[in-house]
Length: 90
Image (cartoon, rainbow, N blue to C red; front, top):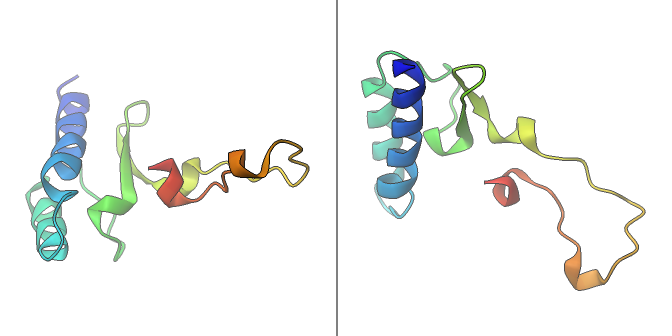
């Protein structure tokens, strides 16, 4: 349970303090990666903003893994069409 709490807390901290950053985003991302001790971020070059915390697996996953595929046969209004990307999933 403590690992889940830590992961959810770090995720909330990333988006509450780091999300609004403009100039210091890279510094903030690197700082969070270094200080996250129990649940490590993957060793990829990505920033912490590219991950979400999966509470079932108790690990960091890329946002791209939860992007749904686009329905090419969409028959609704054009202004209701949303193309799923990592940004729209966030």
